[in-house]
Amino acid sequence: MEGVDHLAHERNKSEFDVDAMKIVWAGSPHAFDVSDRISKLVASDPGFRKDNRSTLSRKELFKNTLRKAAYAWKTIVDLRLSEEEAAKLRFYVDEPAFTDLHWGMFIPAIKGQGTEEQQQKWLPLAYKMQIIGCYAQTELGHGSNVQGLETTATFDPQTDEFIIHSPTLTSSKWWPGGLGKVATHAIAYARLIVGGREHGVNGFIVQLRSLEDHSPLLGITVGDIGMKFGNGAYNTMDNGVLRFDHVRIPRNQMLMRVSQVTCEGKYKQSDVPRQLVYGTMVYVRQTIVADASCALSRAVCIATRYSAVRRQFGSQNGGPETQVIDYKTQQSRLFPLLASAYAFRFIGEWLKWLYADVTQRLQANDFSTLPEAHACTAGLKSLTTTATADGIEECRKLCGGHGYLCSSGLPELFAVYVPACTYEGDNTVLLLQVARFLMKTVSQLGSSKKPVGTIAYMTRVEHLMQCRCGVQRGFAELSVDLVEAAVAHCQLIVVSKFIEKLQQEIPGKGVKQQLEVLCNIYALFLLHKHQGDFLSTGCITPKHAALANDELRSLYSQVRPNAIALVDAFNYTDHYLGSILGCYDGNVYPKLYEAAWKDPLNESVVPDGYHQYIRPLLKQEIRTARL
Ligand SMILES: CCCCCCC/C=C/C(=O)SCCNC(=O)CCNC(=O)[C@H](O)C(C)(C)COP(=O)(O)OP(=O)(O)OC[C@H]1O[C@@H](n2cnc3c(N)ncnc32)[C@H](O)[C@@H]1OP(=O)(O)O
Ligand SMILES: Cc1cc2nc3c(=O)[nH]c(=O)nc-3n(C[C@H](O)[C@H](O)[C@H](O)COP(=O)(O)OP(=O)(O)OC[C@H]3O[C@@H](n4cnc5c(N)ncnc54)[C@H](O)[C@@H]3O)c2cc1C
Image 1 (cartoon, rainbow, N blue to C red):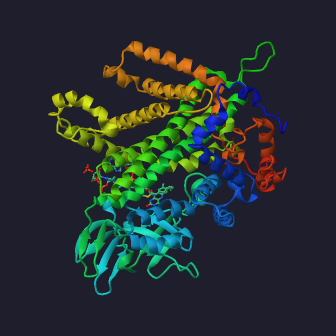
Image 2 (image 1 turned 180 degrees about the vertical axis):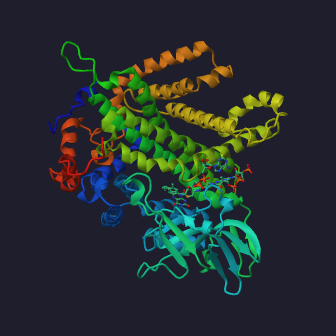
């Protein structure tokens, strides 16, 4: 029945203060207030409905996304929302759109790689959305290998301009979000050529479309690259293709914080590492880690609530069947994901601090922590997105057949999320960067340069490396093992930061205790998953492994009565979850049944096509081949 909380009995089992946990999850009382207020604002506004997406064609879907993005912007302006509130509103609208790249990459690129003068010129236009930007780096022929990009930017001293050109088919820009149909400007990455000499890849602000009638400017060929994985999903986004035919831009539209070209045609490299040109990617990678905790927690919330609602087998004397959440197999698949959601939340908080710290140091030309920041953002982006994509799929399976319905919210969540393992850096390529960083650290062991920060533990491997440092096979030859070492390094960081979080003051009855249980589940689940490595290296004995398994089972029993409260602490509205299986009141079956009849296929009792195709079959009007 509507209005009845079918999960009340579960909520009454909670052993901790859920409202206090909501603050921990949000990050602060202020953050919780903003999140709670904006999520309810979006959920209550019919202009942001999203339950019809799976029935729209690509063009209808895209136009609906434009409508929502414009409506969101109007809401932000009318309500005079702050930047923080506006970002939260775009988050809860929950629809991949050109605005993600405008706010999430185009503006950060200008802030990170533009000079003060360039920021003063372009940021006001971007903040007021008088221009709409995208981040055009990847090409048809190159994405991972940025130094392999082919687009050229040739300086013309006669006219004090750069000529942006796509010399080959493979140099076509390919994938940039928002590029296909909407962006008026791009940060285009191209090989800088001055006086016949190449100076590597730099970013350039290029106008693509007229601000009068949106038509592509002279020399610009631009369009959408076509349908992507899944039906609705990322097809709300216009990932585009772009070719330049000798497009001229003023010299002051090269982003010049890292490198400069003077009007005399002199190239100057600031005394900053050239990799700062990659700074936007580092920034986005750290935001993707926080996004992972959101996506995983959403899937876990759905699967946990449904696992408490679903009953299957185990009826005693005609009594109710067993809740599937009480099966140890269900718990062993679900609770490590619940623990991971919390673990990724806290590592995301720490990574945000690390990024802010390295940014502040850069302003003082202190580049000492840049390598660690690159390794951490790359490695943790890889680790958390892989685990989250796999976790969303596992949550779908945890919901049985109904998990495969669009109305469960899980297929769409999976389809929208999985490209995170690829964009902003293919996950394997990024782990190889971490491996390179680790090997460089090892090569410096024994020198005066002592490892600090997230690699401080490596001093303990020094004796091992000294006896084996003579055996140097090629990085490429050992890359598979090195990638595994990179994953282990990142897992150690996640566990360490979870433990550090627990050393902070955490208010609320039972809250810290619950987080300690989740931290132990996260760590012991990893130990169980990789016990082969731990045993083969002598780090643990078989007895330790057995004890870990026993402790895991005990920890699952401790989480069980708190599971629903732990996902309630995410404070997601039913609108944001977009899932009948995950609805707050647990009233699943009536909602599933009601939703089925709303499918367009049920608009007629006899389906279109019956008379043309089915009736002739049934009436044997089609000459059947000799059976
Ligand atoms: C909120 C927004 C929503 C997001 C929606 C999704 C939108 C998606 C957007 C995109 O996908 S944008 C395009 C993303 N593309 C990539 O991520 C490309 C990945 N490739 C690279 O980053 C680089 O090509 C590479 C793999 C890092 C290799 O770069 P390069 O060949 O130039 O360097 P190396 O020779 O490997 O290393 C040299 C040296 O530089 C260090 N380094 C590399 N990158 C960085 C960095 N970002 N920051 C700092 N340092 C870096 C590297 O560690 C080496 O150092 P040493 O070992 O020499 O000390
Ligand atoms: C949904 C989506 C949105 C995107 N949005 C944008 C955007 O807004 N702007 C933008 O510029 N780009 C964007 N991209 C492009 C994205 O950044 C690239 O696809 C990504 O960086 C991966 O590069 P790639 O496609 O060249 O993969 P590849 O590098 O071709 O990967 C193919 C395989 O090769 C392997 N591989 C590659 N190099 C090595 C190596 N050295 N050693 C071992 N294995 C290797 C990879 O691990 C992978 O298994 C987007 C992509 C997607 C899917």
